[in-house]
Length: 362
Image (cartoon, rainbow, N blue to C red):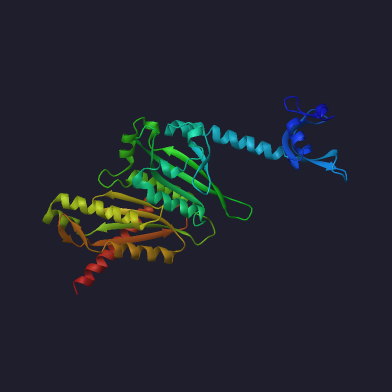
């Protein structure tokens, strides 16, 4: 009898399911349940029950197929514990962008209950100004262009205030190696400091909102550790220097110079991909971190940035032409010191600036 080897807390038989099959409402039914082995150990099984009828359609007996799913259930249990006990907010997001699983930490961070978040599209919680970049990053992931995304975004807490969150998303593929869903970590910026606004200011340039040197070095270290071995992909570090910022400050005032800096920051953010980092080192220097397919792709990217910053722009009602020198260095070595890469990009920038000045003087 099934009851003799069924785990005490599980039902031996599902009478309602049996009746539905006998009455012809269902062809068969499945149930996941636990059995007790001969030595007392617990075995999880998927039981598929099909009704066998005689030639006149009268029920004769059930044929049960039993599949051992103990390993799968143990994996699911450990995964659930991993998500539930994670020290950061975690979620699973389907290819439509909707939450299919969330942990308590994420609910607490965003102020919503689990039932409120499940089925909600993450874009509905994304702060308006960050929506285009969030949509682009999500499209890159679900369409297979990137398998990992690390970005900083603002989400809207249930009470309405913006919440800065560092988001790490990884794509999980199906058996055909196509994106199936995303595993996402949400880590509020500066939560350990108690005052999130102060923490944000500690990691960002106050004028442009870009990452500052501290956050840049942290991102650079992270990018280096994630460099794939044995591939052509490179980490490119671009250093951008606005050549004429001092002239603009002197001729039009520091307000014009500040506006030029913010305009340049916006232009750089629009030129890079989701997941790239744009930082301001201070003064007239900016840094871009980007993972690119090859060294030649990195140089093409540098040229595009240099041309972009050579275009005309309007600042304080005056037509100005920003002049920028853009240096670059690339690496495939994960153990190179971050400061060394910035210094190499800086040296390359000054060499290009010197070369251009020599050419302009001819």
